[in-house]
Length: 191
Image (tube, rainbow, N blue to C red; front, side, top):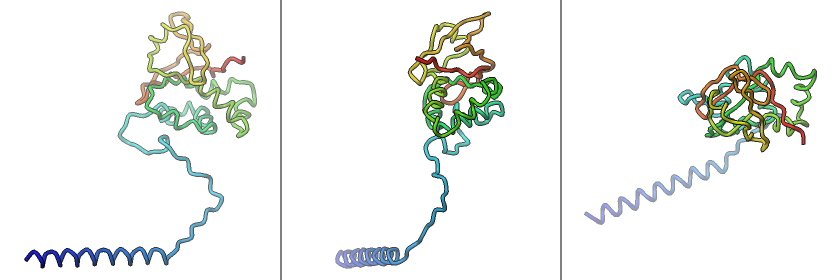
């Protein structure tokens, strides 16, 4: 009885191995040609994973806001999407479209050019702070360390925290931090 079971097992393994060889042989004799017709490289990383169950990230909040289309375009031009979906916590000071429109004519268009990607990334990183502080808690600071390794000044004027001269218009909690909507684009100090 043991001999029959052993022979059956050997037979089954032989059939399995030979069928694998045939599949490999078939796969190696068939080739598929794929052409790429100057398609842009597909963007990859955490920012491009679709997820309907988690709390929105700071990036998702900006992308879902009609008042932050310029900010989103800038983040995409600087290719910082993946940085804004990291675990955090991240505190993002998100200028509105009106804040970008208040910059001198041509500034945004110039910054969005590929050759200005590093300068744009520096400005955007100046809007990001590690942490998850409420508007009221921000009143306790004199300055905040930003993601571009510079500091932004915090003042309290009429009982409201003013970040680098910008007023906080709204605050939205995110899955990886908080978005403070601000009325001004924060510009890093030039050294």
